[in-house]
Length: 281
Image (cartoon, rainbow, N blue to C red; front, side, top):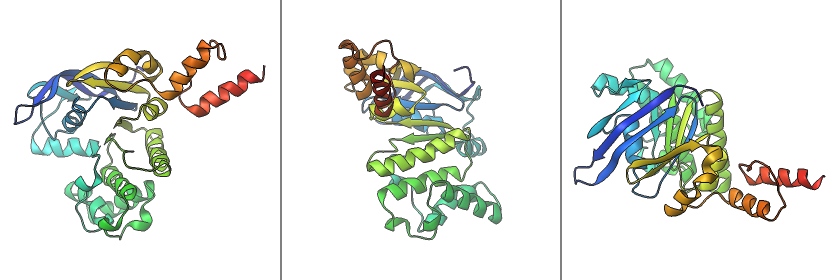
């Protein structure tokens, strides 16, 4: 938990042109190399927070820092920022606009001014990383929803970012597609990438994240290591979420004396192993 902050928000507020609130005095830090989940009800400010992370919008008040340095909103600085902080939108159709997969993934590197051979190498590497190399020349409109999400991630990877931000990445995916996508994210994190994800899936958040940020009404309600996530039951209930199912079941088993003095497992596989170990005694 002592790694340096990669992105820091200091009292950031934002109002949209129609006057509606996006963020309100939001202050938080994202640790370098971490897996962080951002939670909050609809309208809490999650998407607005993400748009600030790579300079798509700028604060009405407060400031955003990367590596301790305030963001520069000049054109050249923003181009560099967006090569370091990649954003994957919830709806892939909002991000894909080229005719073919290869063209779409190459868009970012081309706009960085890279030479043709470098662009080609980056595109092939990114498509391979998300399991879409065989689809490089396919029309984007012929892809499934899950395949489109992978291409969006490949487009971000081709920029070689150090931070990847994903807005509801598993929404609309079946279980197998979710598992495949999470495996890709796991590999990227193992290689040192900072990954930030918004989700409404409490079980996914608890199983996947290292740290949890909960937004409410445009501000940070709490930030904690994932191990302390079940202790936020009152806040989560108030926001309409509830605690992860595995944590709830663990509490019920502990209350009945089935489990005693054990840490809360992060997923049902861990709970199953714990019960097997207990039954062996």
